[in-house]
Length: 339
Image (cartoon, rainbow, N blue to C red; front, side, top):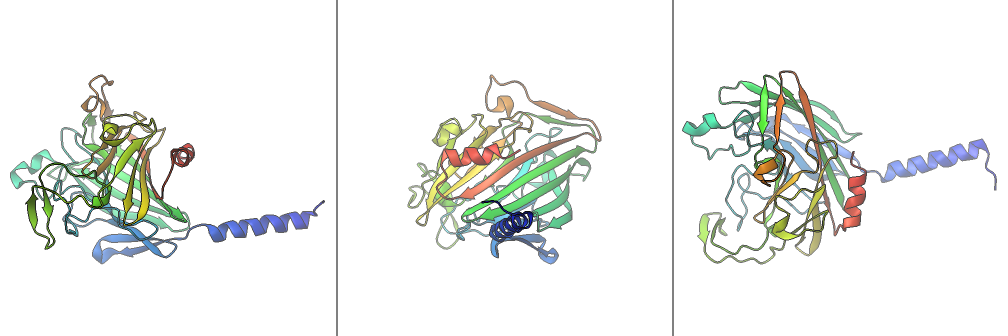
């Protein structure tokens, strides 16, 4: 059957309209007074870019699955009963590093004593550069500063949010430009990190500090591990805690949360420095990927030392996927198209 040019054009347009109808709609709600930009996908809250004055970095927090389940830990922003109370610098999804000109940006938080603050760096919010809901893009600017507010790095980050069905994705591309000569030295504390809800942890086997039902921090000698069932795996088939320190294009974390199988994936980008990155994934709920780890993870690795002269830049890009029971083939397909 032959089609006229008009018929072909009409068919093409109908396919385009149909595809557009199925694509997810991203909305941003900029709440300057609350120092955050909320992100919605198809009318459902997904996450918020937050930049409160009492945090030493910016973060995406909380993060919610397509079905409405919170995947991030509440503590210390909004503590929930039975959560761990360790590492108060672990909030939502963030990006920083443990050794930039000798300063630790990763571990800085309200818990650091004033006398020790000169050893730490802070990522200071500068501005929202632009919002493009049609592309799902939010562009932000910040500065990596020392205790005297002297700028080491200027950061411009493009977040790209998307979703379809039960899948949600976040691409985070950060351009770091040196304001002075900067040396980034191998360190395990980095680079992009997620702190996750209790369901995604491995069952606890030793005494830890947790919040009780009344929200009071308590030493718990024997923990109730009900609903705690997270299992890591990477692209090479390594699973559990053994993924830590291994290099891989992606690492996934699978758990049953309230009767729903959810899989969270962090993908490294082939254009990143030292691809594939080292995994800094821990059973207590820290899920991180580190392109600058080097011998901090593997004593036989090549040394990692990045020197940026004033005005020089590097770009680091990662993708976070939150979906259902994602198989390796599903993740590999997503990774193939992440460039």
